[in-house]
Image 1 (tube, rainbow, N blue to C red):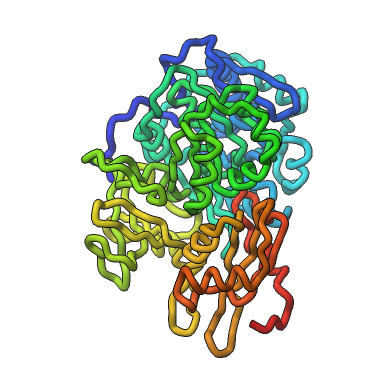
Image 2 (image 1 turned 30 degrees about the vertical axis):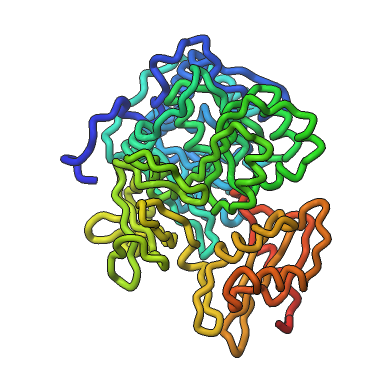
Length: 509
């Protein structure tokens, strides 16, 4: 955004976007990342992040230097993330589930001057970069420094790099300014309810879903209950123990949780008022299952991107009820348009188009990749998301699928997400994942991986027959493979690359 379009925001340093009105003794963070509960008040959060900022500058780091973070979820991760930015440095959370060579590439690409993290994940970092372990005396000493006031930052200065997953090549460094996520935090409306509401975060902090959730919670003066990673048992038990109001997750996590029927039946989750799912499409089957377990909770279908932030949709301005599978109506501070074949789609075109977005949270650029930046940014300042949406007559948007996931079968376009939604409407199917398989005649044909519900007696032919009866014939999966559970990628989404390797070579379909 140009300087003359920037809004006046309540903070100038993203690391300092912590609610000023939150009482000093209110718990900001219940940290379960090291196996024992540790509580951090808002006074602790302000003091320790300021101390870490001072310690980083004392080590000789200069304004704009990049600091990598390699760790599982724990309090020190968030203290480092915020403290680095308070010091005028750039936080670089790194996906530790990537191979060591990819971690080394990211460290080199961002020119990291220091790596902080836990012992296990720091071992992935290249030897050429200095390291400080969260469990070392060095880090303890850093937290004992006299806290400094956050550095005053210009809106356009970089606050963090978030690297893409690299599913289609090497990861790209998304450069996000201080303005970008301060804008996003202040644009996100707080859910109604009493002060100090608790949200559980189990998504990895190197991913936008978990990271932006924590930032917004601190900005709004509420409380984070932080798990080191997601497991169904710990997620359910922790939500009950801490009387969590908000479940923040990706749909795959909730789908796995709902399979724990015995544990859910004996666990009191009546405190849950909102189940917010994002980073992957929702299905009606999953919504119905969530409602059965949380009958009083609001089910929120969230959407966002690393490049343009988590604020995209909201309620309808005329109060029209949002359809359950819709991501919502455009947020009043966000400009959206759908584009197909080079033209903007108006109205409720059923085929839809690729979503393009302009808002205050837009990335500055891809680090060291001007051509890639130009590919996704239009001349008039919109970000091409690569996600296909359609819009209904009331202006509500619906996610269809990734444009680059679409494949052609006999001249027909197939979006795997649409087929998965159809399959998951079957009462005997808990989860489905659709993958294209090359075919000499048709180009590609769909095959499906399916997780059956606990009491389902389904075979391959039953699923094929269901698909043929409920969707165009070209969409039906030519083969069906049953799995006990879906493999998860580092972002807790279904890892289709792992599934694809399970398809027998020379499969006849």
